[in-house]
Image (cartoon, rainbow, N blue to C red; front, side, top):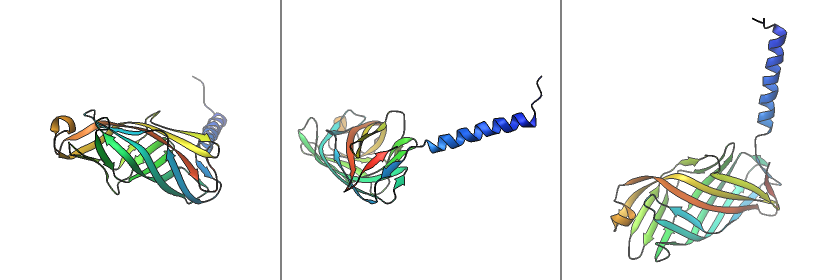
Amino acid sequence: MKRVTNGSLLVLLAFVLVGAIASAASAEEFIYSHTGKLKSKPLGIQTFTLESGLAIECKEATSEGEATSLKATTLGISILYGKCTAFSGSDEATVSLANYRFGTSPRSLTITAEPPLTILITGALKCHFIIKTPQTFSKAGEVEYKNHSGRITEESNLTGVESEVTESSEPAKCGKVGEKFKAGKFNGGQEVELLEGTIEIA
């Protein structure tokens, strides 16, 4: 058996320390040219799909947020969805204000706790759902960022979205009141910009 000397241990510890420093240095951050207001525009249709297969599609989204430092590992933004429909467009739907926190290490999206995120369907059917908050999604590929001309694009393909039925005029399509789902999905994305400035992930 080879004898491990103090010198060998010091060399090993040095390699471990260098590796830890390099890993910390390579952690991604959102980098801003200055502090200020953020806004975004949707990239295509934003779709919430409940475990029952019911899909809510939103064609519009307005948002706001704020960069309070020049570098950060999280980005907070509030999104209000518009022109939402369900049942292939036959019924109107309303999605409440969604407060999201995006992370870089790992890449993630958290639906924050306040206010609760709700989905209300009105029309021939009346269904009301509450999305569980907070919920964090960080599986590989669920949240992706790309730099784009001084802005960043964010794409979400979330699975395992938890929700609860609070009103249902048609249990076969919406579920029963009090029923909880754990396998919902969300697919959407946005282009985020810093007003009169730039933002990148690096």
